[in-house]
Amino acid sequence: MAESLCHVCGSKTTDGGLTYRCAYCGEPVCSDHRLPENHNCTGSRLPDEESAKGREAKSMKLKNEQTVGTTPSDTGQSSPDVALDGSVVGAESEPEQSETQSWWRRLLPW
Image (cartoon, rainbow, N blue to C red; front, top):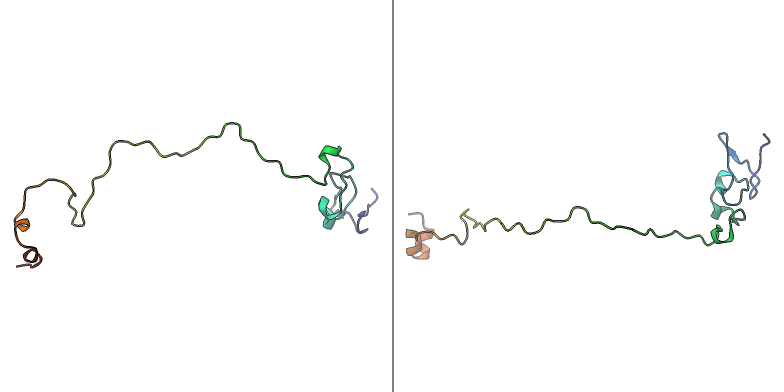
């Protein structure tokens, strides 16, 4: 097989045994000019509506959009509020002696 030269710069189009040809215009290109935008590709092999110039990414259209991992609905139960001392806040209990004493007496250890 005869070695072909890049139609842009004239260098070899083979690199390690692989010959580069543009998928849009079919011209032989070197590794530096492989991408269509690097060799001013005309896209002459493609129909007009699919030419390389002006091609833009197409947005994906979701058919059935679903959300995965949603939070469960209210279970009806929640943990009780806990005070700093570990007691349950709002739980009714018998009045202790400390509640009947003045506040400064409760702070003293004796």
